[in-house]
Length: 84
Image (cartoon, rainbow, N blue to C red; front, side):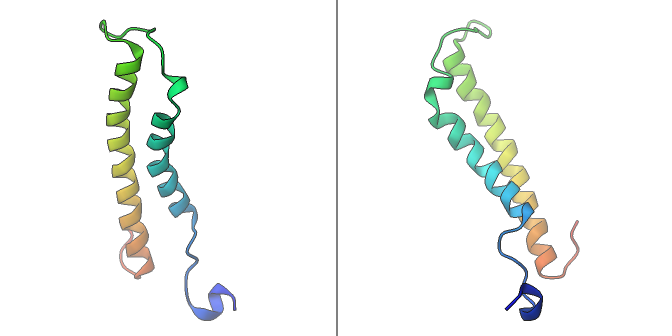
């Protein structure tokens, strides 16, 4: 049966894909070690290898917050509530 016939919304939506990408990006970035396994460029005397990883701590936090807010909005929309 189609999604409209049963009254259920699709499980995979564009919002959920964005959420998945936000949560997967830090893992991909950190597991691809050859992309950041170098010393140059230095930042305040800190080798790239270290400051790149520390930067991803902040980026991961921001991406997780975005994913959480999108998830909340998606759940409210599914329940028919206000989608603010």
